[in-house]
Length: 180
Ligand SMILES: Nc1ncnc2c1ncn2[C@@H]1O[C@H](COP(=O)(O)OP(=O)(O)O)[C@@H](O)[C@H]1O
Ligand SMILES: [Mg+2]
Image (tube, rainbow, N blue to C red; front, side):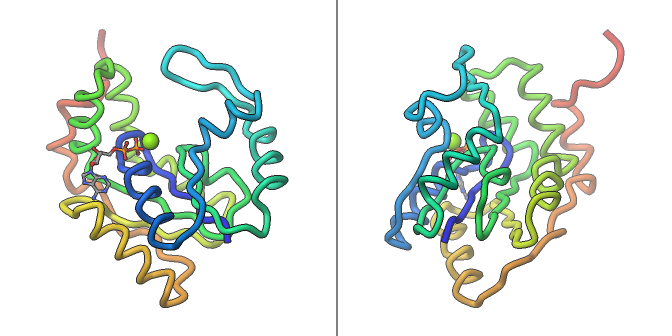
């Protein structure tokens, strides 16, 4: 089974995907490293620009029928049997990305993406088996256990569990609002 762990940058994909792969005893695959290994995409500063279809082709070729956990913010666009969309309070995303030295603009972009469910919507566009997990206030271990419980109970779809518009006021300081 191919499990894709996706979400806004800073949401906890790498942390959770590594632990989940370990617990399931399957291979952990960082999509960025995989793309580089295959010689596809172009590194631009901190980011890797890659043709999604090309990456999906290589993922299918290499991992179809195998047990892997795919880690990356494009993993929901890959062939996967189950897509886990990690969610976190946009303020948490902002704080983590600030610590990573992201610019105010880049932080705003990602906070807004989390606020309006960008990755969830993309995932739902591509897949039926989509599970959202809210990581807010949980430890990575708790998140991994929640995912394992969902998998073990055979749940394949669980969406619509967060609504960050309810905490919009807390998010306003990080948004790229109009004006100049
Ligand atoms: N419940 C949680 N799930 C995942 N990460 C968490 C959680 N709580 C705190 N963290 C921390 O948040 C950070 C997430 O970073 P990372 O896994 O690199 O995110 P991503 O790969 O999505 O950019 C790590 O420092 C991790 O320890
Ligand atoms: Mg990561």
